[in-house]
Image (cartoon, rainbow, N blue to C red; front, top):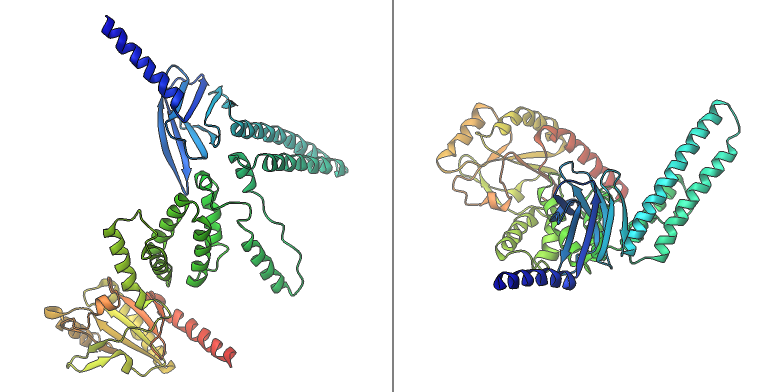
Length: 473
């Protein structure tokens, strides 16, 4: 009996000691909530992740405890099994209570200024929302009766001003709290008035807006990563405010990553996010962004979280892509005609060279050949040569020439029976058909061009290049 009591006292002491020594202890008292489980989640970039699963200590009573401080951010408590939720903040004070009724989801925090501010603001906004609904109903009646709306519109202005003042008082008075950061993220710098033509004014406004887009969001603050607003803002900046061409994207991504560097979790998340995004991108030329990220960060030892094997693969992949990026000189290479005569790429004298890697067993290639023949006939007079490289070799090599003869392919047809040129590695030919468009100096103008759109793309490219040449003179 004495031994049992000793063990029981030890257990009670252990629970008590944990409660006293834990850095974080958040108590949830939820009336009318019968389930014995409460999920705690958090925002992380574009994801919502589970932080912990709480089991009821008694009906409606849950504790979130941690021996280490919980990372600051906006968190979610998810009711089971209906997956309804409420949000709460975790910041400076990490020992507090949240008490409320599950049926009304009306919570009252105690012991934490951040959540007191957050829920006070929510209640304030709900009350103003009800006032606005009443004003809208009154406005509709005035419109229907064709009466003066001036007084009611002034009430709207007064209501909006009250909301703005409330937000600003929290932002100014409590800048260190998550509630203030959340409200501050919705602010924007007023755009000045500019002089000039309509186009000049539009450009100036765009440049000002982009420059000040993150003025009210501290990208170096790790807590911002754990909010629902950051990823949408980053994506809008990258995809909508940035011209969708590699150099501009690299510049914008560099700005974001440099601003995020003081926050290792944010820097790591978005560097990985951008790398994965541009590694998978099917947009022509966007592989330059991927190569830049590898060269600038991964190859320079700024990604200690990446294993040596994966790092090696990333760098090897970038090494394969770098020589064949748009704007680079096409790697010199020698192929062979049917009779074994060498054909060097740089010996082709044409204004443009369209290189297409194909195979007679490739369904897409065979489907593309009729349109490619027509393309050749249409664009040959415009200085376009088509260099068709059959990718089969060794015992399948003869199949290339059989197909060429049977289908009367009129291009400059070549191959490499023994793969001496290593063209698959040099031009990263992992699938066929694979198309490159080169200028007269064999600089890569475009690549991975879809064969079904080759004609329209080539036509637009020629027009653009001729226009640039005329403007240069």
